[in-house]
Amino acid sequence: MNNTTNIDLAVSAIRRSSRWLKSALRALEDGRWDDVVYSSQMAVEQASKSVLIALGIEYPREHDVSTVFKQVSRIRNIPEWFSSMIPQLAENISELAELRGLAGYGYEKGLDADYFKDYAPKAYEMARKHYEACVKLLSELYNVHV
Image (cartoon, rainbow, N blue to C red; front, side):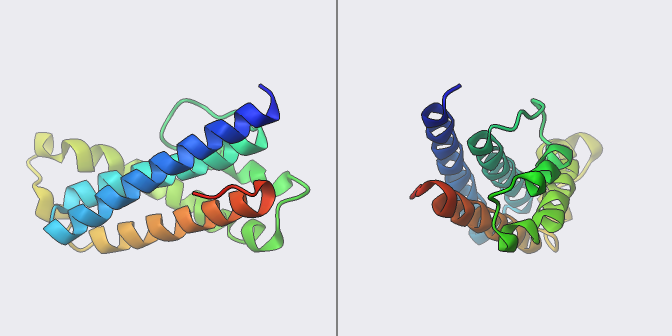
């Protein structure tokens, strides 16, 4: 892929992340706690993949890309403010990916939306900060505006 294509794909991914984040906020406002967690996970996944795409880093076609995301710290032109966040961002990816299945299919285990009531606000804040960091990085490195 050429760099322009990577950046175009990264912009598409970060915009998709933005839509998932809006879905998470609406779910939070509506008290749909499981949807908050599911949508927050998708927002984090898409934002993370947007960074990986922009940097030309291949990633597995799975929800938890935390291991690959840690490679971002090895890229030379990554600002220190973002590099210092990578361990926490990778943890966000992993934590939410682990809960995604339960949020989407918890009913199979007899869980209802209230199971995530206490965790949902944390999941949303985690996703919001994650998204904002990825947008800021793409903006600084590639003059991308979402």
